[in-house]
Length: 263
Image (tube, rainbow, N blue to C red):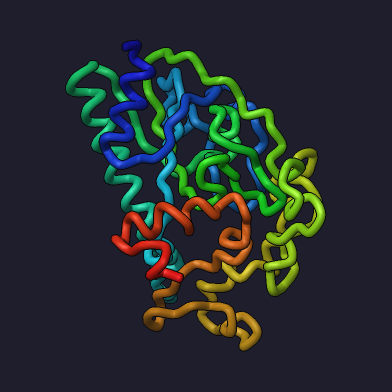
């Protein structure tokens, strides 16, 4: 077994559902969308030679829990606690520690680079009309994290199928676009659209979940758990027909509930 295959096997042992090797230089050259605060891979780890992309299937809405602090006059920065990010970072650091201990390879997990293009370049899925990475196995019900490593790994082949064009419900009805209560997603493919322009960010519910003084129109669509805790809006995600295997198979398996009982 080669090193790349061994890393992929270990990634799954540590709880990731998908793993691929992306083209680090392509992500390094790619234009970052404005106002996202993203960095280039070599800014995160100057000695990086390869980019591993890791995917975690969101099989329960609880993984979408986010808690935000309120900015104050003394501290303008908002503290953000995302459950799925914490899970992925913990698992990615386990993989990182294994690489260092067993292979002498240094690595750094990061959420700060362009993850969806990296996953597409690693052959794991297609960036859909909703700008989410659509995987053949799980649809868009996957969260991503990267692991930058200081050793050479051959990139996997990029994903070339247009999953949205193959799916009649996407091609003809654009369920994800219509699911947004504020029409924040511009209709049509994501390909060819400049970074950051496919979604009208100020019309997206997620952007307003951190507002200190919230307008009533946004409040209606925010699923609060506490005053500053909420489940992220996933409307454009859960309507995707490619996510059906998660509903039909993975969720019942994880919860120990048969399809008959669930229905």
